[in-house]
Image (cartoon, rainbow, N blue to C red; front, side):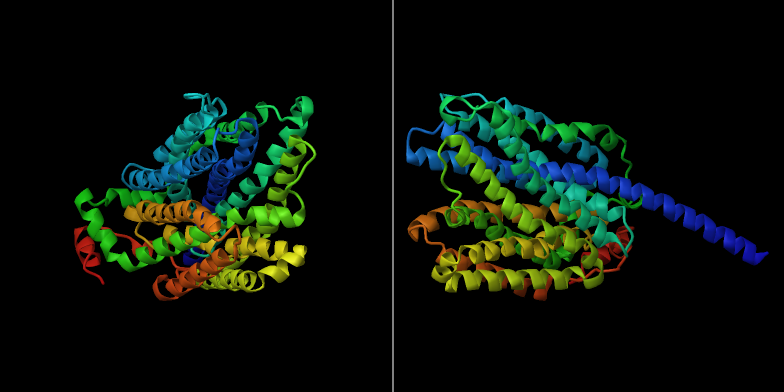
Length: 466
């Protein structure tokens, strides 16, 4: 009789596990589509800027640099704000409600970006404003998607689930040049090979379409049972900082490594002119041909980088987050160092230079680009998980601002020779590896419940740890 009851109990647990697994996979799919379009919106702007500079060039070179910097950095600053704002609200109010708001924000400002109009005769002013608010919505997706994916998985497959969500960044990056190339060939070309304004407008507005298609299912998502339990024991706001302080070294590790990684990841994009020259894609008989070549280059680089995302998915739960991050940072540092030392020789062997350049993105994705997203989603208590992830991600966007805003003047200072910037990227990568060794904990195969805060006494204990 006892055996029958035990068997029945096991069968019930198995059915519940199967049901939970199905529900969590569905959550991953819904979250993944949103994250894909977030990445698309962030990466497509590089190609849109090339088109805008050809069709509506600012009157001076200085204003051209200002326009490019404003359009790029406003989205990054907006993303940092969104990461902090929605990370905090996701813990206090709820993941689902904030997830709906971020999606709505992205849809609205994707459409607004497509409808950009001149302010004082300048398109870039209006586009920068819309991109800032779009960035707020995109930024909010980072902590919310990570916590939803983490809380909907088991200890054994959590890394795989979170890496699957993050891999959609690679798909979004790949999709951006595909969409632009499609539009360049579909939208009629003006006389003299000039591209129509419809190309960049449709490219910016495309991001809203998949978001609209998944909006219903995002509205129907339910909070995880883990978050519902944690919310019942939600500490008052005055205790949030003491709780976070108890995890100060872990947070310093996740924030600083994400900051350092994004310096090289976003700054690395400035070397594309060197690669374009090597591939002979920086020329074209017409404006249309030149833009096609630029989009093809983006497609090549994103194709080289894409496998890194997918290799990380089956490996991260077996190998561990910390070893993968150390390996990725180390390989990036070695490759950047080789590119700096042997720059002239590599430029003569163009294909080898392009391969090494692409491998920096490959090891980014099979390394810190994926793990900096996963780790802060699983090492903090549920009550502050989204906020701590938001702090870490916002640090990353600050690093992106440093990379984009700081590397360009340095490149001009070095007469457009990237050698010294490669040395800087190598140093940043090795520093990220050292910090990972010292400050990042390994949480492979550990339950999220090990970090839970259940009552006042536990709060007091945890806030006095360390």
